[in-house]
Image 1 (cartoon, helix red, strand yellow):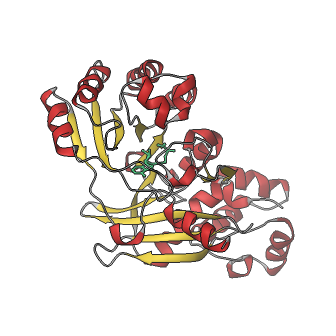
Image 2 (cartoon, rainbow, N blue to C red):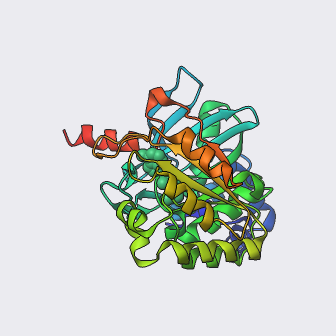
Length: 342
Ligand code: SAH
């Protein structure tokens, strides 16, 4: 079956043309898809014959809400979506003063193996399709009634490990006929796959690249992030500097503060040294505890922040939203998996 929701308007136009349909049909269909229709029968301005033809050749695979949790504290909503094949992924809607942000997943599970992360505990099951990524934004919007102005690729999965899909997704949400969300309103977070960072740089997108650094020294980083073992912090930082040179976009570094692991003064000093040579922004994340992991949140967040600021680094501490609803890092999917398996 053809996955027409993963097609750009140009691709859909060409695809329909091959089947003898005029270009304006593509626009009509595209518009319906982005209104979140669940079946071709809802496309009421198409002829019955065309709708039947589409039904025979194309699959629409809108996700179902498997679980939904609304934070009583701040209105954050967490969705567990059930995909057409029964797999589940999460999205989170966060409400900020400057607009609504949706955090979405790009893979079912993850193969990167970070020690502190719930999403990777059972490995990667499969990549998502562009349509499955778009649908998380679209159906979060439709279900919540909140208009989404920002997207962060910080849910389950490693975006640069599903590169082509993510690029297609970006084109779709960026397109005026699609979700029409500007690149500057999109953040992409990576565990630091250097070759893919170099590849992404070539597209010169105006999005914000976030790099999950979490440690400035190889010993610590390799321990908590296996992906570092074949790369090393120095090579990662080199590719980050190249990224800045090519795109002119300042990189944001994520740093989850873990008690006794990456929160020492010498690590703040080394981090500051590593970041020299290109503008940077450090986002300190209070660690979310994962049941299966012995890692605990650091008690030195403020001291670490002051130490970095002393070196002239711009630092923010991530505000915790949805603390009452497991609104982080693959925890809802994990819980659902556990309860299914008894
Ligand atoms: N794979 C991508 C994006 C997904 S995770 C990446 O690695 O960047 C989004 C962010 O949450 C990453 O910085 C990740 O390291 C961080 N994260 C994962 N588990 C966490 C936890 N338990 N506490 C705090 N941050 C966590």
